[in-house]
Length: 237
Image (cartoon, rainbow, N blue to C red):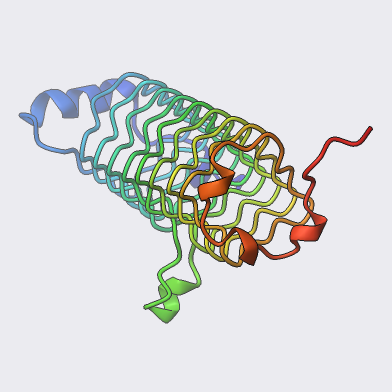
């Protein structure tokens, strides 16, 4: 991880800005490029091919990556706060400890590792992060949101089936109609979350804080939660 290929950049912001000007509006091809540590904030990278690119520690604050191909790319500790990532392809992405606060990931496919990332206040509507059990090899891949800050995030209609959400912060998050079936929510904090229509079938809630939930009566599979007796459902005196 400390090699120059993972920590250095082979191009400058000026180089990429020149590529954008010369592209005549066409998506850039930056696949497999070393772009770590650059300031690419606010750039228009819509539809860009960044497959297997390294952007560790890169500043992409407010950048437009809508529809971009980010498969197997590296975003360790990258700043994507306020970035547009709607419809982005993220299969195999590694974005541990990245800052995605306030980012728009609507309809994206974050089948990768976001452990420790900050997604607070993010727009994750119709996110497609569930494991594909129809394909054995892809079925092993899923969204890893372990210890991710999703407080106040909008996840309406998201698919997080069989995802890893251990110790995730979901305080006041909107989980309306979210598919959580078979996921791991052990130790997660759902205090104040909206769970109307959410599917909790076979969801491990051991140690999870299920306090002041909104729409609990209309949650699906509520009686089929795993380790429900170990969840925190009332404040200790």
